[in-house]
Image (cartoon, rainbow, N blue to C red; front, side, top):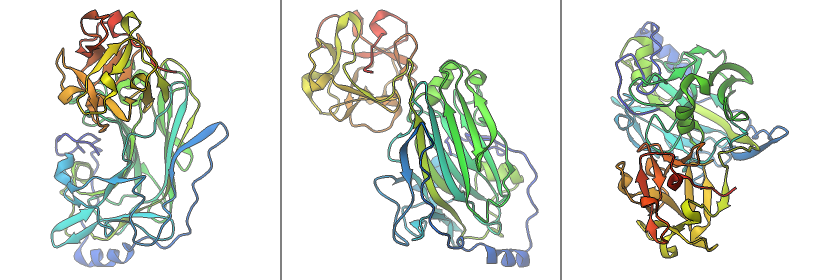
Length: 447
């Protein structure tokens, strides 16, 4: 579910799948189909599976709670507003109402699309931060048990389970784990990366499996998963699974190392949403959705979601804390240990204080000190833009991807963290500059 409008046969930021739609049903048929659109039949709660041997659970939610209560505020936040805000052509308004997003009391999260006159509402939730990623030398699996909206829902339903990196799309990376449109009982997996339009990832279409048959996916819970495999950091891959069976894979070699690292060598957020209308469903049916026969009240129901990782190793760090050293043996330092927004980040004599105790968060994506993030001032992209401290906000101004030469790339600007003027003077504020591979752009991160 990405921004950027495309041609009418494509989901902006996703895939066109130019297939013929099913004929629009007659009014009587629509009325009969509506009988099957009720919320999924009550099912017993599913526990989150324990991690396999050698894996660790890093995030999970079993959606336990009282009927009609919201999902855990600690795990989820809402993206609200008109669907037009998301750039995908969808027509619903996303809300934080329990009418659209609620627990069913039986261990499931239901996201329900409703219609009032000609207006539709639905829901979209995500983890508050980019919280899960594969460490270098390790793997990440993200899996959910989902029942898709029922076959009577009709044209325009667009359930999705996906992941998005912090920063500017598409270089920040997107992994669509499960999508279906128009109540077809199908599934598609896709990645987005690189540049828009076109580029090595064919944006805004991405690189995907295309829609595939998903028998029984509207009448029961099935598992949808992806594994990001970084065990060989020179040949990484992403593989999609339906009920444990692999059906599609994309490799680093298909898009190139630099593009892959910017997109996937960091943490991402987990997202669930149920859209109505838009480029993807319209492109599949060759029509405008929803239609008069589209029935409101259908839900995407989620039994659980979990993320597991294996232990990694290698050149790109996982979470760690300590000093970041640079040119001349100086340390990256929060000036005067201040937590004020826009406080300068500088090079300074290494002294072991809290102002130099940086945490590498999001598998090398963001750098934290004293509860704040290393930030490009005002999200600038020009040479010489100052780098400072700011509230962590999950934007591209705070993404720093370690490169093989020791530099820290900010993909939003395409520039690197730079010790200004090759300074060895304590107190010099650092900046953005063209990536040169010079010693003043080499940073040694904590292990």
